[in-house]
Amino acid sequence: MTTQWKFLGKYILQGKIHCQTGLHIGGNTEGFEIGGMDNPVVVNPLNDQPYIPGSSLKGKLRHLLEWNLGKIEKKNPDKENETYGPHFCGKCEACRIFGPANNEADVREMAGPTRLSVRDSFLTSKSVTELPQWLGEGIFTEAKTENAIDRVTAVANPRPIERVPAGAEFDFTVIFDVYREEDRALLKHLFTAMAMLEDSALGGGGSRGHGVIAFKELKAEWRSVEYYRNGTSAKPVSVIEKKAMKQIVSDFKVEDWKV
Image (cartoon, one colour):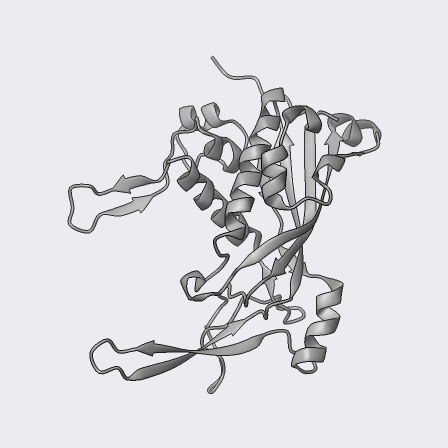
């Protein structure tokens, strides 16, 4: 029997991603100039400003939530090179929030529509102004040199890596669709993944200190189906304001989100 889904509305969650350390999300290395950076960050081709792709943020949040839920599965268990990968159950919170990552009709029907959309995050207007003042006209990134040490000879092999410097900030927006009343409870799992990300890393080089971020100046609003049909006003969800992410998780009550 086909499950009935009914669109009820959207939560719009916005805020800033503050770089606690330098951030490296790799870009295209094709066609780089001789003497140029061979580990560049991804940039907007229209203005050469770095940004955080929505796919990078969404993928990291899913990865962390799957580990939190114990849903990372062993792959090729009978082979010498055993690896780990995502699951495709269609039933758990990760599948319902991020999508089931499976094209089987029964799995997709069980999970229902993907609840979460993550937009690309661009530099705040303040960072667009301040970064060139610190780094030089038209410059928004820094070059950090790291050394790979040969374990036998102890010879250093320097390698430059481009980073968005610590202190830079990006505006972010995530959109959470609600199709059933019980979907509101899934928000706590999203916030849990965001809290975990603050104690993990975004982008590459996390084990070497890159990519430590914090979510700041959070705000949320509810846009019901009537907002789109009849122009009804959006309703702010004030419970999220002026709180750190971990406090949002610990204080979470579904009733607070039924505005």
